[in-house]
Figure 1 (cartoon, helix red, strand yellow):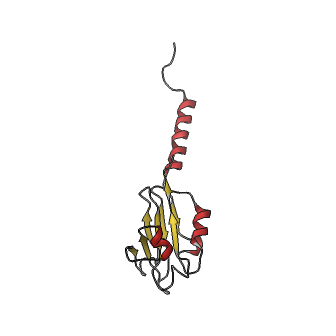
Figure 2: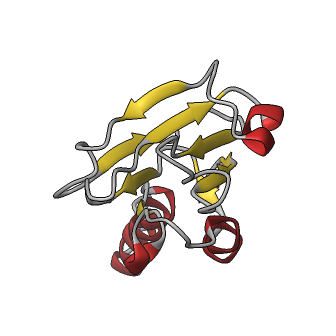
Length: 138
């Protein structure tokens, strides 16, 4: 008599496959700058290039002290990013919101995200700006 169900080996294989797919599709939490956190003088362009790729639903965590003050702004375009022009930027985190567990930002759109700190010379002289482009997970 022929069996129409799955064998134990097939079930184990399917469960293992499902678990591995879940592991691949789970969003990551990434501390911006790694152990350097969000600070003046660190090269975030280089950090992003070495840390990429970033994916949809990943969470960026901006951790910083409030002395000296730093912030997180979302800039509207590349021109604003290159010029450190905050006139149309959106404040995401003020100088106190990066303490402790840090400020969290979920990459929930397929677009270019331009981040920078507007405090003092953080953006222009301190390299405190970052470009992130999230990709879909497969």
